[in-house]
Amino acid sequence: MEQVLEIKNLCVVRTDGVKFFPVLNDIELSIYRGEMFCLVGESGSGKTTLALSIMRLLPKSFRILSGKIILCKKEITDTNENILRRLRGNLVSIIFQDPGAYLDPLFNVDKHLQESFHGKQEEFHELKIKTLKEVGLEPEILSSYPHQLSGGQQQRVLIAMALINNPSVIIADEPTTALDVLTTRQIIRLLDRIRAKYNPGMLFITHDLNLALDTGTRIGIMYRGYMVEVFRPQEGKPLHPYTRILMGYSDEKSSDILSNETPQHDRKTEKCVFFERCPEKEEAICARKIGFTWRNETTGIRCIKHERNSQV
Ligand SMILES: Nc1ncnc2c1ncn2[C@@H]1O[C@H](COP(=O)(O)OP(=O)(O)O)[C@@H](O)[C@H]1O
Ligand SMILES: [Mg+2]
Image 1 (cartoon, rainbow, N blue to C red):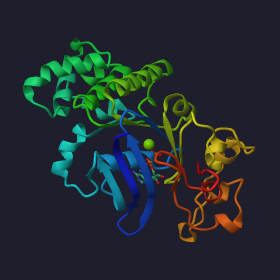
Image 2: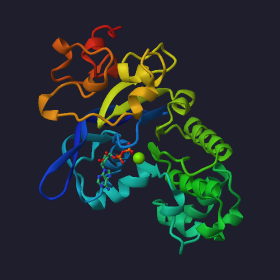
Image 3: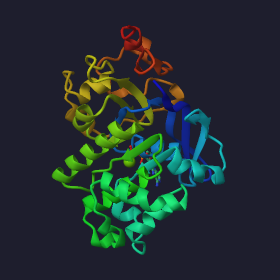
Image 4: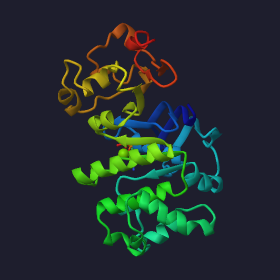
């Protein structure tokens, strides 16, 4: 298995110039060539921040405090913007949630593809036609402007822009949220076909666990800036109490737990982040610092009660 993305102990904060607010804490993640890794979490759990960290496109008020981001064996945590510009597209590209907001209204599709393309100019013509075909668009669309396209077509253009340099990692951040159910299904099928054919590591971000269970080879569950579990849906039931609540395996109803106001989590106490909501907590063992434990190369958990049980 070729690892195309590795994240170690990543901590990201947001700052207002005076204080730091933690957004991502000790994130551990690895993505392998050809897999569909689905990242799931409530709104505000840090999914987009993680995607933007990998792209090194975080807004100015965010800062990577510590940790490593490694793309195809190159560490890019501190790489400067000039080099990053080349790496984006060639090694990693991203498909955003709202294609309408991302596409430039003054550029036609041809120009968008041209701007995204990093290869030799003489190869561009052939490649753009091939890439459009790959995403289910006709060459005639090249002269169209974003406002002339449907939401589904706009998202296909964005996918073509992400695909044109054949990157090793493709991130899709809630790519179907702005689309209707039918178009959503088509776009998911398209992404999966691209994954199977071109073999990138795909990081698919969604707040929809059922969609992730249908689509993902592995699933990562985020809770309030922490990765709490990484599991394979085909290999038995997950163990983290939060994942089990989300999946309906717990006596607790997810609607009861999740509709309530998110409890305050005092990071200084170093209690488990899920402590306040956890139906399985035991004061004696859970009120202490808990790290993410890899069970094997691809699955792991951040729960002291289950890290030992989950050893295989
Ligand atoms: N523009 C912003 N201004 C202030 N806080 C932000 C902003 N964007 C994100 N955050 C903070 O970062 C956290 C993670 O947000 P985000 O990564 O967008 O989560 P997700 O994509 O899972 O919904 C949020 O809880 C919020 O506190
Ligand atoms: Mg988001």
